Length: 174
Image (cartoon, rainbow, N blue to C red; front, side):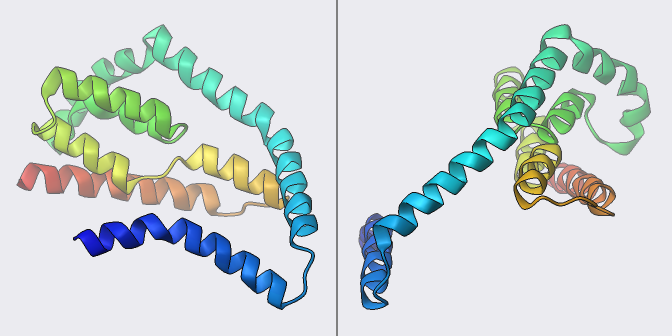
């Protein structure tokens, strides 16, 4: 175990020196390439910032307004036969937009139900088996200048539904 910890501590510095060494061997202007890459990255950050601010503001409004809790209450009777706890509706929705906000909801669920409860296990599995769909689509599609996403959103929503379904089944089996 000590060897693994030692190697994991060395990975970043070794990778850093490997890149510098390879650049020197290939006779590249490493500093100029770094500055150019950093500048390009900064341009992308400026492009996606309004989208990120909009997503985070929307998630904050949904949480603060109580809409997500009201939706969970509305869906409670509908979800009972499926075995999916209605307390996880807000988490499932928020996870599609923001992983940080979903983690905050997860911690609230842990405080309320406990991490080893069925709800806690299901929530943990959901967070680890789903993606922040809208965040990912907005960030990567803006950065890559994708004009026609085609079937990405329906595919991502289907994958998320599959992850939520599998999480519910697995947690109920434990």
